Length: 273
Image 1 (cartoon, rainbow, N blue to C red):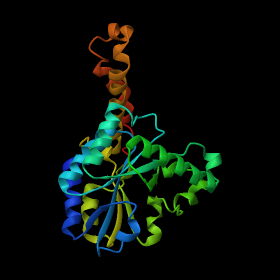
Image 2 (image 1 turned 135 degrees about the vertical axis):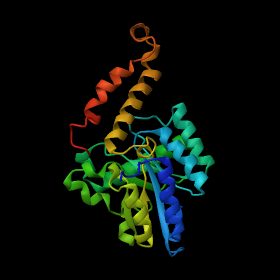
Image 3 (image 1 turned 90 degrees about the vertical axis):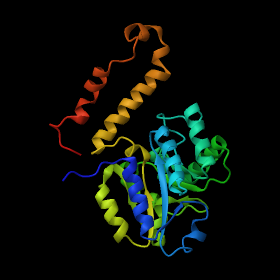
Image 4 (image 1 turned 180 degrees about the horizontal axis):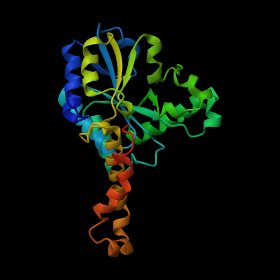
């Protein structure tokens, strides 16, 4: 029997399954300490926006449809997306109109200096202020670290420390809240559904929107689709206006070339990830 795909419908199934088990689903927010004892079964939910603003905006609408508010953690230093672009501003507008929460997806810019806790703190202050200015939202106090798995060993301890008055998403475990993430499809859809019935009463769940929009069976499929989206987006926003490129590719870059580029990711001969 084939496993269920990572799709929007199955994301909805997972959320509804947790709700049927009596969990109150709330965003990770500044009022974390007040609300964590309010419900006997509670889920703090967040979405880290690693690459895809369009996917993030879609999930803003999906979560509204589901009747839940979520925390969307946004990057301010990434070269992958621009929060001040038309797409970025429309996403921010969607988050605000749907009454979700904005948090910072904290970047590691200088690993050597970042070993110093004082510089971590000053960087968090700097980046949250920048995000406040971009979004027009006051007192952003929630942040999550980006790509913690690739941090140097001498930085690992910083990931789980408290940085009050800022709420570090990875510090919630120290308050007895169990953390589960969909990173790289570490749990199947079936495992998520099983988890909803067996998990502890207090949870912190992370779902990356881009991993659920491609109706995929593996993370390799997700990455292939994201790569194609990156290339097409760059072409649409930059190359298509160049007269040399337009002469070479009047109808845009040929699909066969995308397929050649993506073949190593999708090759059946390589080990499935």
